[in-house]
Length: 367
Image 1 (cartoon, one colour):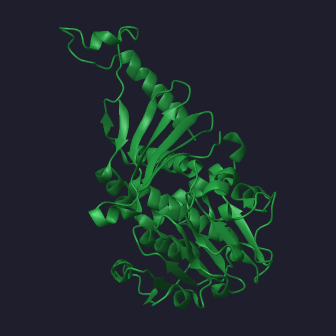
Image 2 (image 1 turned 90 degrees about the vertical axis):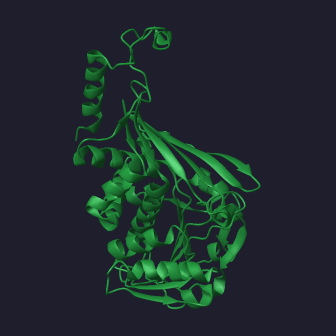
Image 3 (image 1 turned 180 degrees about the horizontal axis):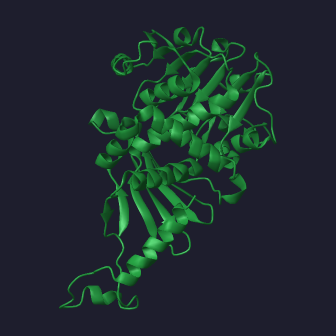
């Protein structure tokens, strides 16, 4: 039997501890895994592009567990009443190859993206940052706001979206959090929203080389959290922002970011720093209060691995995980056809198979 987390499951898991605490806990898991960067098998995601969007697979393994995420990105879906991004994922035991967990990752991807954004900003933004501009107020925006308010102490959010209804939706949802210490203002342009901000997050959905931020909008000391540009031909920052002499660019996994991130606009020898180098001390973080730091975030498979492992742990801690019969367990593993043979009572789990599954789960979840 394989553990399963669907939409009701993620609502239950996150509901018990709250979105902010979930994001902070997930950020800690992501940081722990980035600190053992060398243990992971790493590769850029496999993407199949179409005129309307992209479907991707994102795999990784640390030799003990393997994970992958299936994720799509279809910006025009909202016109059909559909989500722009949907996802699911699998966590598996490397020794046996058996899946341990099948989980929704649509909601979880939004949570992990916000966790990664806030984690990077903890290391790169000025510690006194309190004002954030949030450009792009769609499905990811609330998660970003919650993460930055909770983990970095952001108290003022300056919102802008080309869709005025999206701005109003985000403002309502932030006000609905009951946080009376948060100031939320709506603005008529990205330039107006960015003015006076310490941190700027861009999380737009349009699949094109857009210019959401231009060089004149960027003030010394800003931290830019560029989230929306995450596939070939999709960017948000003017290339001259990356070229600023006072700017430094940080990425998750350089080979993938060269193809998908803001730095796809730059020559192959353009200098960037991987986030894992920052955590290990191999590369410095912010050099001065006036430096402009840029987190060119495209999302990397390690973060989904962390999310799946975190969900697996939380579901077991909360008790009675839901299971599905995705994989057959046989009295004779060489007799797969016996499942379909006439008179076979069922694909019952034998005591030996149950003991094996229990033993491997205990090994993989041990502290």
